[in-house]
Length: 340
Image (cartoon, rainbow, N blue to C red; front, side, top):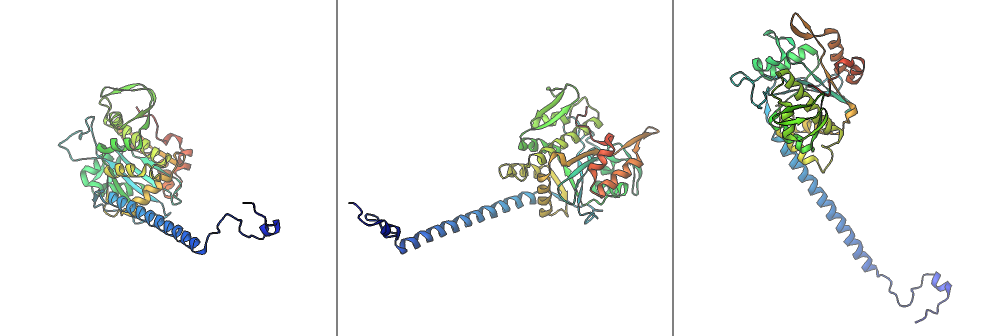
């Protein structure tokens, strides 16, 4: 049927013959459906978010807590400093001397700046002679066996003047899980070497969890050499965690968080919210914003002692959120990316 109306009639909005204008009732029903769909989607998203929060909170709550004394409630700058240690292990993954009290060869300060955009790690050579409160002079790696994490925390605080906010111990038997959760990490060696039948090539090696432990426990290394490998491996783990934002990516967060919690023991004052905040901070850091240095030492009469002038500048750098500037000025303290 031909529409015989004039163009004026069409322009004034008269219904075209053969079509039906939507009734007000139909429009209202469509609007109700859209609103209900939007509300349902919002509820589902809320439920998913609540479920994710419950899961994450449960994972973090599963981290073992231990009492540790001499922790500072806050630092003067608003940053956070954590004392990190690990079990002292030999090439088999068991304590080098099973009958001896557990010491710690890996001793590091993890520092996050107040602005949360930069941070770094300071490693202590384990054989450094230090003054231990109430015990006198001894090697730093032996302090844990003498007085546990509380005495080590007090010793490091007295040594550096840096407020230590929290303590965390890494279980290296679970580091393999963390490496696999990250999807391999890169370790660099100055020359080709072999450990437990696996050949590590000179240069960069992408390793899975099992290979990472073989790298850290190479039997031909000295105890000091294995500690350096542990430090290097933790640098690789933390570097990838930060550089690829694995803790802030919804696709990787769950498996990485699960692996991270499985390898940690922390002090009893470390709350779930603080741990999650730290994980978020680490996830936001970029590799270029992370500084890795080793406390400067020298040998005096056969003993390893701190170089007081340079170490004094290092402790000041931590307290003033300027580790990167320190590393630029004292380049010899930068932790090598390719230890033997």
